[in-house]
Image: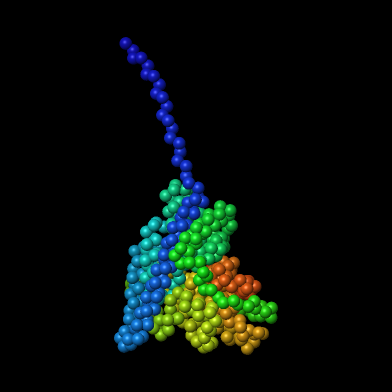
Length: 438
């Protein structure tokens, strides 16, 4: 007998598609993590620098062979940090060029393994006295956390890239307690565009990141400047000329940095770890001579912006040594950025230029601090080619709103001069070097 036809099966209940969380919520939560991690990174760096300062004081007090102990510590720190970067190659150097490469689709976001490598390697490298900045690792760690948060919450590929980029700005904001500087950094330097979704993601990520970092490092400006009087109108042409000279200095710094990296790459008789140790020994020797000759530059900025300006000859010595030692430290391949040493170099340059031009300046006796602050922003603008970011970042870390007009003039002249000298912006050079693209 023919089988009776089967009754049709009842359709299975379709499972409702899983809703993805809002990208803004993801950016806010990831920003909290960036703030806590970046604040912890700053706290660890401060403790490491204090410990190294105690070592310098103890070696000077003991004398004899103990004087060489800081040299050995800096050499060992540079070697260990370089070895960490060799294990995780993307942890070497600044990391900002990697963030830009991801935005340009030249690379994909790094894995979470980069975060501990950047954190530990950065603390060792900067804590041992190398002339490196905390912003590079913080920017890169923030970017990786943003991308990973997007991947874990199944965001689309474009949103993962947006989170990667926006949380990089949050990392910069945490490094200097400069939220506006972090937002402008994303739009002016990393992407060179202003898109509503990118801006909104950066706003919420930066807000939560800086808010959480304040639980660890506080909210005061990084280098608070005593009340500085608004320079007289007669001094404004001097700031314009000073900016032009700073543009030439920034172009020279960029060429030196790229040339130093190429030179160290050409030294093949010794491995990168040994080479890093040798550079660390040189920096350690400088620190034994004067602690202001090494480190990220926080002590230099505190002294100059506090009004304690050395003689012109002393400023010239600091300027020349740090101008050379900064690119040399970067050539170790250890995790660390360029911003902080660059700001210190700019402050030295500003104070030095003021000292040289003092006899020619109208009512310029009290303008030394103003020139130091302006030098920070102008040199940043010439090297990075992001003048608005440089101005806002400098105002946020110093609180010197009275100097906005001199900052505008000097950064305009510095950027224009560097452009006319056909100097490639530093992170474009580093990105091309990293990706091998012309």
